[in-house]
Length: 220
Ligand code: MD6
Ligand code: FE
Image (cartoon, rainbow, N blue to C red; front, side, top):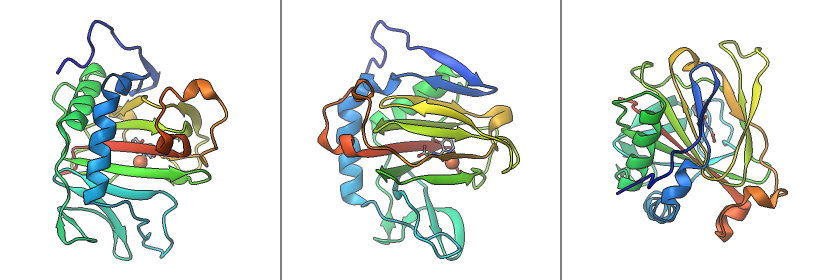
């Protein structure tokens, strides 16, 4: 599969060791959306419980060898979907391709994800500031693909109290992040209903009302 045809996508290091690849996932959009639909048919989106006992605002699922789960016992990666007691769906080739290619372009030449967390946000859903630290090797980057409604990504520092930068993530954008930023706090501002039609480069009715984020990691 030729991901990039003749175009070189715009890649920018927007903050130290944080790369934004604008629109890169649009090149394989149709197959990514089709694969997303089949994954969530097999492992439906659900609102996981935080260790404190609150339902998370984003609905989640996973594919790949490992899935990120949260419940009263804490956060962890598990090979089993607790809702079905089966393995998570395998990682589709289109997901593998876009994540490896994006990591490669950001300088991570041997990134092979074993986990893809799927977050679905309805209007007003958000994600509080957190660190990603359940993974085994912090030298591996994280690759994050945004689909559907745009969102403001908050990118803070190593302390929860550090004032975050704001980054607009639109449909098809990929963020790759690692190195000295790997453990920085980050979150998602409440997602707004579509206002700027120019950011809706798709015609998918589901994506007009939802933001979906695919977060790829080498977790194990
Ligand atoms: C989201 N993403 O974009 C939530 N974490 O919906 C994350 O929490 C995240 O996008 C680490 C690296 C990239 C991310
Ligand atoms: Fe995160």
